[in-house]
Length: 222
Image (cartoon, rainbow, N blue to C red):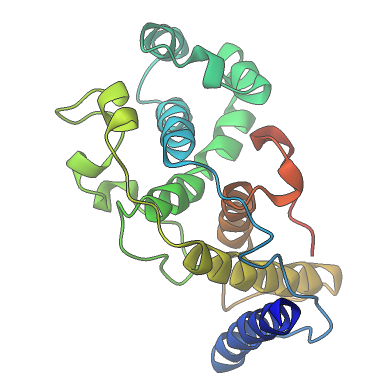
């Protein structure tokens, strides 16, 4: 009986995503398999998500030349967050070239997704343009407000349901396939922004512990 319900869930989530793509006139690969089910998925914990988004918020300041790298490193160490900084992020902090800053600036989308998972923002808007982190209320952002980052991390966060996060992960898996397909076939993807889609897919795969990969190693298979 459990297998019957599992297969129904897989089919329902896949079909729901495909219907959204159909309405948005985005190419669908009906042969793409379903993603993990609720039963198969273990989400990151709220504190784990809060720590990750806090580090991302600090590195994002460097990407946009808002603070100096040494200031960011000292800040992360003073807040006890240096252990949460990944090897790739440490490389960026120690040598923030313009190319690396450009790449890191895309992590705005990851920040948005993780804050969405923590119910700090209400929606994942249609992925046709970069999000604006200035649209997030100061009290819902991990740094820069009246509370410190550790206050943000340790406050009890309410996590979105596993089903809601998996729905988003499945949809962005299919969005990402459409973007990759367009690139392979030298077609211009006009409906959605492939960079936005990739970063959101990346963050969602981390949230659902896809292949149990660490942040630097998350893959966005399509």
